[in-house]
Length: 276
Length: 323
Image (tube, rainbow over all chains, first blue to last red; front, side, top):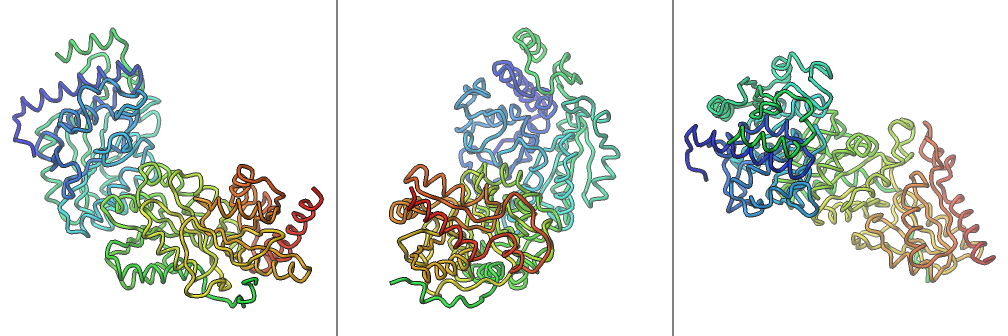
């Protein structure tokens, strides 16, 4: 269990995670830095901000909360966070082996190589269904475990997400919280130019979900939203987290190029200076 | 002494119904057994489980992709979910979910396809499933089962629950002839010799086992001694039984209610090629979709009855003798 951290401490961790993401993708020469950087505060709040109940020394603890990175291409942010948590299976010194043969840090999350992961992901649209099954089983088992699932905004164009959304409301899966990393961009460009999602809040509301909208880079706002989500009974909560793709590095912010392209060595140097 | 004289091939219950009943039995023994369904529980017979264990029955609506993901989530928490639907919808619509959410992390999910093959009958090709053996076998780590009758289904559903890892069970809509006596033992990966014979081997599964037994009787009348192997486990294959059949009879026919170029036959042929090449013939659905009609008429029209199997056996035998 984590000790309560101050906002300054949490922001320092977020900066550290961002440095890892830049160094990892830079060393790998491929990967998805943009959508990793946009999700940093979300994961830092979950893992270090008093939200997730977990114990790095007991990764199999049955009552631990689960986190599913449904947008599996943002694997670097999850790897960096797990390493900072101190999981033995996720050594910090191996972060730069991202995407290399035999690395625990595969291109997309792979439980076979990193057993502390709760799910193998990478094919978009599937994590919410998995979370629903986990939530259903936990309730049936009388297990207080909660499940958190991070969805990409482009990802929710997948039809399976809405099958799972219907399921969650119908079965009153209130121990699941979904977060949409709403950075407004996807691989081919801006969401609005590829397949518009708006009006997004009414969509989730119409599917029977409790919907919260927050600044996805504000740790206190995220903490408050997670607290509210935990208190809602009878329906699942989705947190629409407004974020900036590439957040924290000036030349990567809102730049579609960095969805799936790693920074060059020069760009790594520049980015690390900004994140010092 | 051939075993076949013991068989009268009385019509039993459908294998889908045998699955539904077996699941209830398992549910009484193990509180972790669950049923997951996509608005077909009356057809898949999971409604029996739902009636007795409403809390452990998960209704997903008509949403197979989500259903498979939900089953995976249940398995992640130690449950043993049986997700059932028509084979065609489950394997085709949710194949990607079976691949990434179930097979890839090797989760303990059981997938039960009902209404397999063309013997679903009048509903026609959109509801028929003639490619799911191929799809299921292409998932690493999956066990793939195709029981012949109610006895086999009951035993193999139990074996599937005891096996740790993903399993696909193929069941059918029509009532199936009873091949086995109640005490028959089944083991995943172990074929059963239902008829002894030395001239030619007929390897079959599902409804085709009964047809293969009838074919063996027809051949017997001509003085041809045909062995019948029930290859109820398509993956992992019983390679030793196949090697023995090839070595001892020198001619093999594979009969299946599935596309002939992507099912049990090609998998058996691969084993034969590796272990002991011999003359082979294949009975199955030929590169086409079937049509509406009574199951018996469809099986006859699409070449899946005993006389067709006997023709294939004579061909294989002639090649063996000619070669």
